[in-house]
Every structure is written in structure tokens, then in C-alpha cells.
Length: 120
Image (cartoon, rainbow, N blue to C red; front, side, top):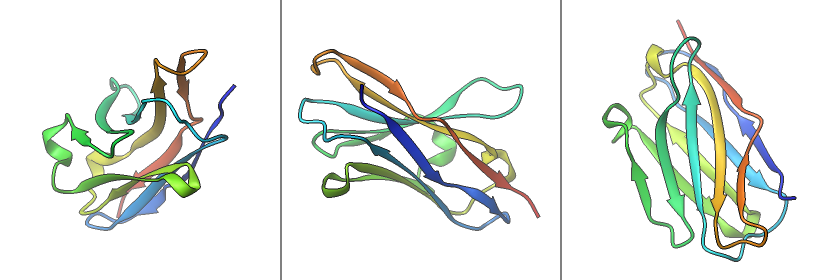
């Protein structure tokens, strides 16, 4: 069973920058997408930043476009979400999610979540 381990996050002032990363316990050789999903208290999950096996990225939330960047490091089996110009509204628990329908068995695995707090 592939494990996802999140790291990074923490407390930052508005306008600051922070990274969150997610490492898999083994290399994924089949086609996959790695997603970052966040959830603030009392709110629905959003963000929807993702990167696929080929390095193609997508950001489904307009408010993070131009501020957040997702990248991957195949040598480290990890994906990083670089966040800049952070706003109080970005405060949430950030989860990574690996979806690999071509893996055997197919995977839909979540990391444990990393807290990001933006506050002055």
C-alpha cells in the first residue's frame, strides 16, 4: 500500500510564502495525478491543484492562479505546492491525494494533511 507523507506548512503572515510537500513511499510508474486539496474549518474542500505523470499542471481555483505552483521531483518521489502572496483565506489543512487508476491495485490515497495558517 503506497503511503503519502505530507510536510511543510506552518504559520506565515499575509503576503508571505510557504511550501507544502508530499512524498510517496514508493515510485509510481503508471500514469497518475497528484492533487492538492485544502479544507478550512466549516468549509468545503477546494483548491484542486494537480500535476500528472507528464508534469502537466492544472489549477481549478481562480484565487490561487498566479500565486500557487505545483511541481514534482521524480527523483524524490515528491510533489511540492509553492504558495506565495498568501492570504488569510488560504488558511486550511492541505491534503495531497494520489490517484492512479492504472496502478495495480488502483490507487486513491490521501496524505495525513498539513496545517497552513496565514495570520498577522
